Length: 268
Image 1: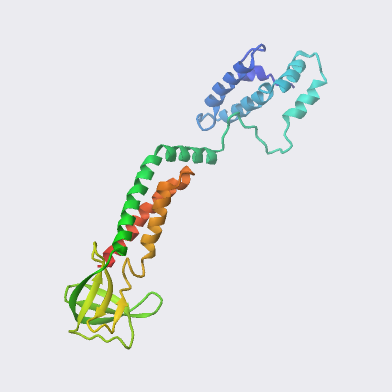
Image 2: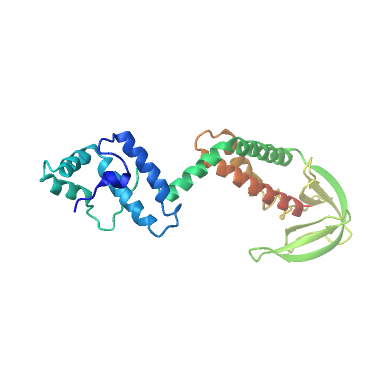
């Protein structure tokens, strides 16, 4: 038996495409399973989609109208064939239907677009911080004389042994352990630190026979942290393409603030 799609959409036979679309949207919203908890809502929603798939297509509608009027019975086969999908699992999608995952991604991109200015501001701030570290690293070092008050052997991350030195200034730092280190408790050493932050960078003896880089420092083994931070901050500020890319860079820069702050605290 031929279904009356006009009755399903609650529109007259003379309805135009604008009327059909308006009626479909009204009923689709009313009987969508996510909005209507009625046990019959899903079945009605499928009927509404099926009706719109037929009447929303002018060619299908013309054939259906002929069949409904009984003036062209051969149109029945055409209509039936056009309304049956090759895949039996197929369910017609309403016009403008967007997959949930794509919809969520679109909403996320819209949110990123609205807040991109804040993300750029964050990248600008982190760029200033990373440039400050870069300048502090490049400036000539300042020197300070201190005495050694103790030694301690420590093991590095890769199993290498290091020497942790406690100085009279209350600071401690690690250097690579060597059997030929000409230092002993009570010796006077020269600690060379960064000009602005005072991060220890090198240690040497007065005789000039020993000069070693301080390992566990933001300007030592962890210098790659501020280097990466400088790069990602510059990209976040000056790279003008890709809203998602620039926004994600600001998140990376925010995380690098934490990492660099932790390493900086370890350096003293």
